[in-house]
Length: 173
Image (cartoon, rainbow, N blue to C red):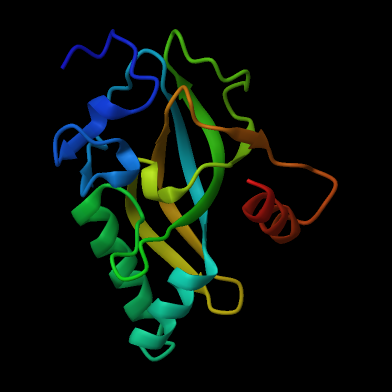
């Protein structure tokens, strides 16, 4: 694929089935380099939506190691965090590490952000799950996500606790 062409809605990252938008895709392409209008985020935390996290806790008897393994399996199989049972995802926080030359996002490299689009349409590669917060549905990871030009993102506020910001963004997003 010609990565020098725009991919504002992310349809060029859909691997299967052909002809659908990223949210309806079974598998997304997480390979680099970026398309010219995409933004790369070094992800450090996922905030899973309540339905998805509850389902994972129930299926794996509140075992954080088994939940972490299942999250790795889902993202490696699908290229995104979309719980196949609930059809839901969540959101993420991380820092901007690279921008395509025509990325519309105004953030600077190194700036901390929270996505306001679902993980069900966000290309996501997880190298490692570091911890699972069983009370909040927050997953500390090492990985990256690709934000399309059409994706909403907000700066992570410095004046309120991160968990509060995540909860606010998750509801208002």
